[in-house]
Image 1 (cartoon, helix red, strand yellow):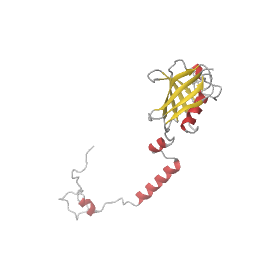
Image 2 (spheres, one colour):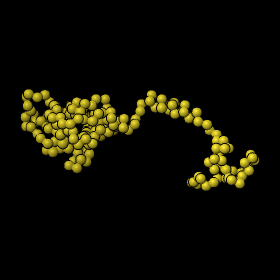
Image 3 (cartoon, one colour):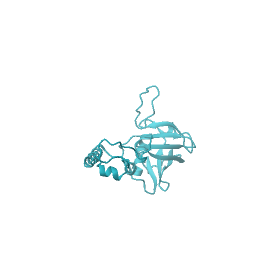
Image 4 (cartoon, helix red, strand yellow):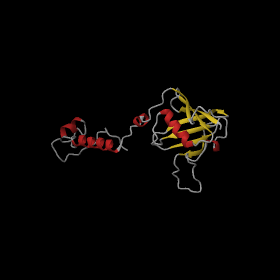
Length: 202
């Protein structure tokens, strides 16, 4: 059975790459699991492969789980889709996206085909690993995403702090900031309050 050799690179990490070797009759699900193993990511998130042309334009999608409601045009699923059914170029390019919240995007490029598998190896396999892979949840932390409990705690702390802030401004404070017209009678409660031009009109 022929063996495909793919080079995996990260969109934002040029110094790191992996070489994945997989038989042509194996599934994209096996490919998916081996990719995650090679970079140390868990298998908790959804993912998709996108067969691509020479300019990395996304074409046919192969998804982990078809979430569409169109039985007439289903999206191929990894568990049944075999690589030989979709790889039709000796330099086939594939985009792999993992975790659609963090949008980890990786490029896979076919760079070699072995006519026969090596009986010493179990496929798919990680043929080569160069450089450190990014940490899976660092991107989520950079985006500042928080879970529900963290959000509730932040909101509670904000409300507690705003409760301590006075909502009224004294006459002395208002005068200090120039909110009253200079010719107004400061002793008359009914004196007209005129804007001093310190506020923009919208």
